[in-house]
Image 1: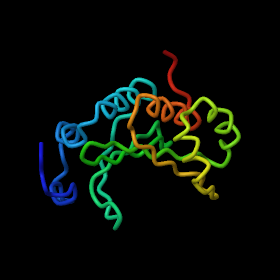
Image 2: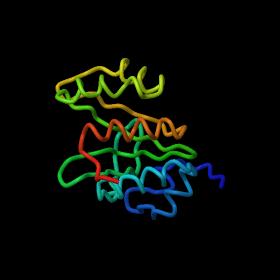
Image 3: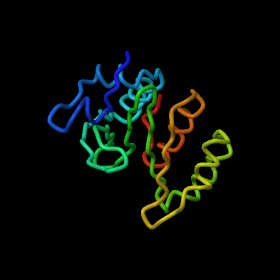
Image 4: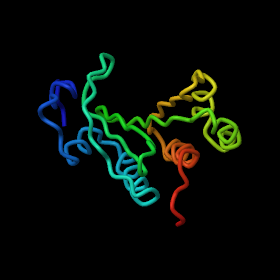
Length: 147
């Protein structure tokens, strides 16, 4: 599907995309897999929100377990990016999880500044291994349901 329009032009604030349109636009098999995982492990359904952010305006999807934010997913043509925040209180646990993560995720963590709000990691879902990294980092925020 080729379309010269940007995401924000195609789906302006008054025209939210359907989930099918999101899936087609992202055209990334790891995106539906992440969505299924978030539902099965946390009961989290995507909540669509429009961002006016100057860097990347448009629709994104927020996933929560109760009132706790788990991740925000940004979709681009062929890409899905999961933003996962590691809270300051979880940084020690993250240091224990990171050795099992990909080098790409470890480098992202090391190169992302820590603040009083935590580290905001933007992980492009480019491989099944990075999807597993996302799952491991999400487990720091909230315990997944037993499988």
